[in-house]
Every structure is written in structure tokens, then in C-alpha cells.
Image (tube, rainbow, N blue to C red; front, side, top):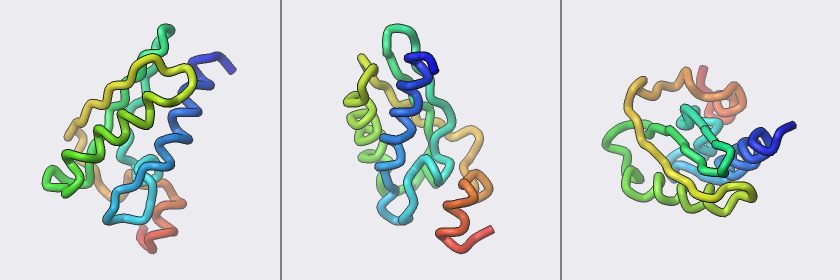
Length: 104
């Protein structure tokens, strides 16, 4: 496993500690993370969405994610980009998340 792959795995583990306060499932399992990119310099870019544009944590969750990712070993800087395309839907959740929420 390369250093970049190790850093990405550590980022995923960190993302699994971030929750949408209205849904008791972490944002990674919810399918809110669209892309994790880490370059050779350790700069991390996370492309993520929210369950809806009117999400009550739209202002607080992305900075929380950015701050947590910035503490991951191997990450020299972290940036979160919120995107709306494609729009999130319940089909993006992991099987574990669907089971936990009783959907699907």
C-alpha cells in the first residue's frame, strides 16, 4: 500500500467519525462523500454533498469535515468542496447504512 493509499484509508476512517446530526449514520456510509483526492504533497481534497441544499448543517458540517481531515497523518492541508451534482439519494448509502436505517 502506497503512502497516498494509506492516507486515503486514514481519511475514510476519519470520515466515519462525522455524522449528520439528523441521521445516526456516518457521512461516509451515507454516501455523502463523492471523491477523496490526495496528492504527493499530502494536500487532500474531499468532494462531498449533503442530503439536501436546505440541510440544517450545511454551514457547519463541511468545516467540521475539513478540520478533522486536516489532523490525519500524512495530510498537509485539507479542502472540502460541497457539490450538488449528482444530487444525493438513498441509493447512495452503503448496505450497512440501509440496514441500520431500515431502508432499501
